[in-house]
Length: 200
Image (cartoon, rainbow, N blue to C red; front, top):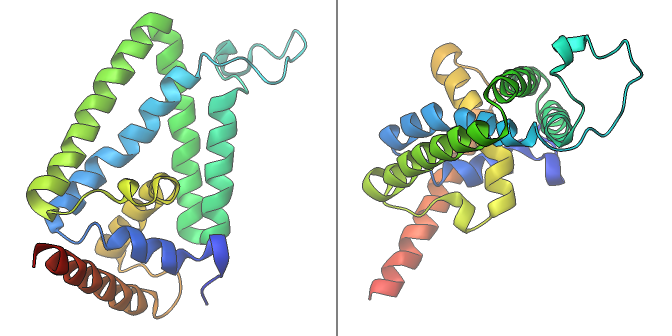
């Protein structure tokens, strides 16, 4: 069964899905959403450590893995995804953790200045791809223009569940896909009607 309020996966998924119904746009987002999350964590590696471990603990991760803002963001996203859907959410939480580890090692090896430059270029490429997906293929503005927080929260989990659905016919619970598809169709129809009224 679905959950209510902030943890209502059906509602979040329907909102995000209504902005991503074109197959090419979905593919573009599948390719670029997780790299965006990864390259957000790269510059966050240089945020101050929230906990100072005593000497002897600095060998953990070769002194690279630091409990900083990047770790906090990773933890919050991971817990949120698990709370929304235990199975896909746990996989998404694992991906978040792997992104944090990978981003930490990359940032550590690149150094502050180069890490920032690489992150900015990666973000530019990924966001450009997504805006092309919306402008050229979806022909609808991105979800973040209507609900920034919901779009940023849901994007990684959305593309993961989309992938699991395509590859393994995954459903968080029985009937999820049918309910979501109906809600997405309704939301798209309402958007098209509003758009038509503005034109006429």
